[in-house]
Image 1: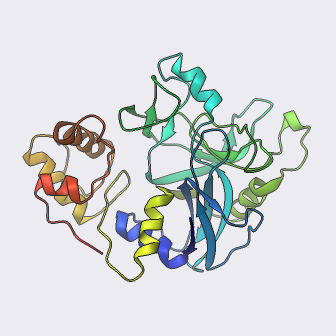
Image 2: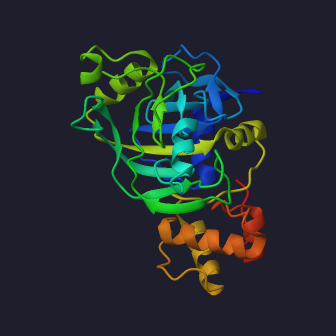
Length: 307
């Protein structure tokens, strides 16, 4: 299913999810289960077509983007926001250790740095420097709501995927966000970087900006927003959301003895754990996705907005 992604829709993504992306900067974003319609167009523009696709943990099936918030333009690139099946298979044998899947949300601090510094594959990348929520599976080769959530920093960096294209059957991710292409590194004899990764890295490294926010959503959620047009869309809260609606959520969770933190409007680790525990208690272990929408809000007796 194809749809038009625009600057306005990206702004609506932030509004609906209560993400406070930094203004006048480049912001990264990832759309899980979505590919650029033209996988060779890396130009900045006000709109690009994307296509929803099934995730198989074998081929790159995601879009990563760079959004210039001031200029109201963005560029998109093929890649993956999920680990490859080979890494998952090995991790299942170790109880889930060794591979993870980053939860959707807003991550405020990816910094210029080196992925796998000191090794032959070390290359310029964007490092996740803070702890964040990830899923780990120990029973099968995909990720769903019954998989455990851990809050740590397994170095889910943004880097080169070591693959030729979207039909490649191997890409280098145990949980990192990766782009099609190859890096410049010792293992490759310091040959220049290639493919979409080369353009993505250059675009950001050419800027004085050192730290980048990263918005990660499922492509079907973005399609819901795009399809709504001028109609209202119900709000969502998840990791990285900010503001008054988060405060209402925290107060409601506190009233039901699920949240003991500060009422600060910051959907961080403590709020996420409270939401997961509440959803498990209210809906069962397969319904705790950590995302607050109309159904979770109704049980919490929160008046839920449409935007």
